[in-house]
Length: 292
Image (cartoon, rainbow, N blue to C red; front, side, top):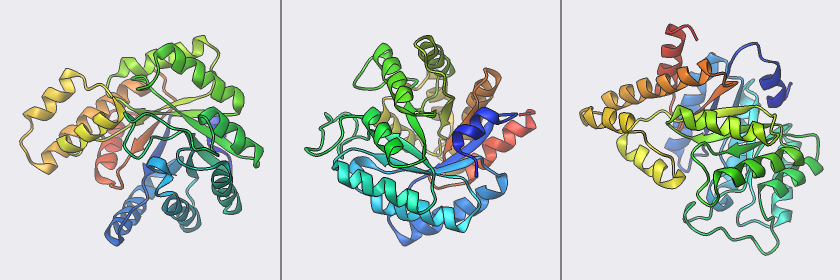
């Protein structure tokens, strides 16, 4: 099977991909598998499973990722972080993916269990950053490695430093990047221009989060530091407190963002599904109705 980087570089059109998270309950597992079954017919180019803060759910991530790879024909990306883990623990996770035949890995430094606003601390026997994580993954086998990018900037660094860090990740062996969620199109294109100017050449896929509730949006913005444009906030605040109407409004907002991404030359779209399929399917239907 071709790697994610090969797909992104060789595709004749935009790629579409989905991200899931490892469930904690039986109902959560049921929701996840239902979402996968409903989204698989859309033929995503790849899917990924998150690792979680401080690697606390790494066993669940490995289990879900391997299960998806076994149960479907999906091209699966496994996530790995280096937060609160020794180098040996990270090596075991990398090797587990390799033994399961998973050749694509997304390398993220990760946040502390208290969230991204908590000062990051290196594990005494751990890695310093995502660049070292990329190097370690590449040393363990023939993996295609992706990394994160930040259109709204990283909470602990400035735009110029972010660009240099992304270049360092590429030089360490990273072959593609997926961005954190964002809502302002200009921020994505500014990011791409900024990193191209310092020598980053790998594909940078915008991460899209369908908004299904105002509360959910607030939580993600708090965790990520993403900016909410006034037009987005005003649109959501005008919607009655009805889950379906909020979801539809969120889908329209996301489809408008996706349209600008594709028109501007983004290589694809990566949807943060929250283990739900309806909003993502609505957005893709809207895009196809517009000729994308």
